[in-house]
Length: 107
Image (cartoon, rainbow, N blue to C red; front, side, top):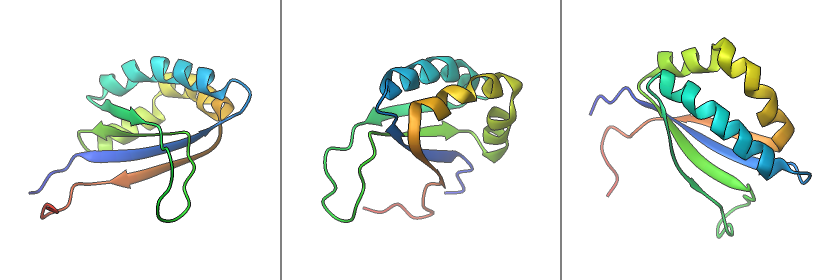
């Protein structure tokens, strides 16, 4: 397949005091920065219940980048650093996991 795109799995736990509202503000400001490196935010999901294992995040989504260098440009950009505090204030915990598509699709 040789797909060089990078997918970042985001899982966040909102701060009980207006965390969801603050995170929505963060996403609104973050999206143009993401798009400036040809990245995009994929659909968001609200986990309902873990059926195997333990997982209780408030929100999960993937962000897609054309390659690792695009992610690094995004993450180190001055524009991103100006708004990163919003993510920190909005969450009590977060996971960011680098993913790629498998060489052979799972069917």
